[in-house]
Image 1 (cartoon, rainbow, N blue to C red):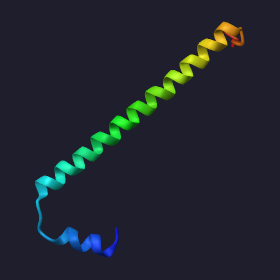
Image 2: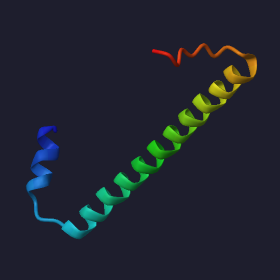
Image 3: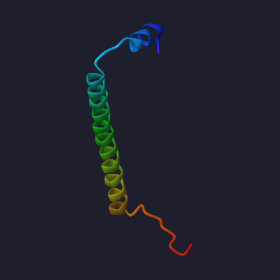
Length: 63
């Protein structure tokens, strides 16, 4: 945190507006993370199914 930002944080302000802004930022970050995770999970699932179709799965069930 820079000195200017720190000094502005000490000034009285609209705490409700600040809380709403922070909440919006958290929700936006959460949605981006959910989308990214879902995309990565789908890519893994597609690759896993492709390995099944190609017969590339070597599973040792006896271990």
